[in-house]
Image (cartoon, rainbow, N blue to C red; front, side, top):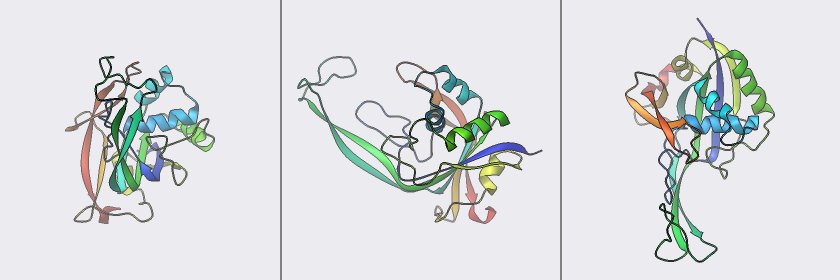
Length: 223
């Protein structure tokens, strides 16, 4: 039986989906995180950081992602300088070595992902409407990563599940396959063999919990 599924396309010059970022080093994983996608929706809805509705939103949708164009990893070296001629460390003490530190930041260049979300149809319609008329600027993981096209793609009842949607929904323009002609995909699965550290907790320290996912590679001929 088919279910309502919201399709998003995340495409841009740069994207960055941090999962292990702590202090100086800002990483990106190779697929959009669920917390990042919920962040996009929260911006569109005008939900402030720490709003309990964000946590509820996270729990009320399931997500799958397919890498239509996986992109290339870029590492940018940035600096941060303290106004008082010093910076604090994680323990709240003055850092040694002066007021300036190097902060590497990773990005994905020219990537495009198809995201499928399932949940209550009314909620999916609210998300769609918010993406049409966002309250705040939408960005792909970091504020410097602006989408190069509208994020909303479709609200469809053509599929029976998230895995089917991210297997059969048409690819983006200029897709690039992995070696051997495969596309990477992942989706929420309580019995999945992999973990993602991107569960929203509304912790004031910005800690995140874990969720289980299933990773698969999809032959291009199936799409």
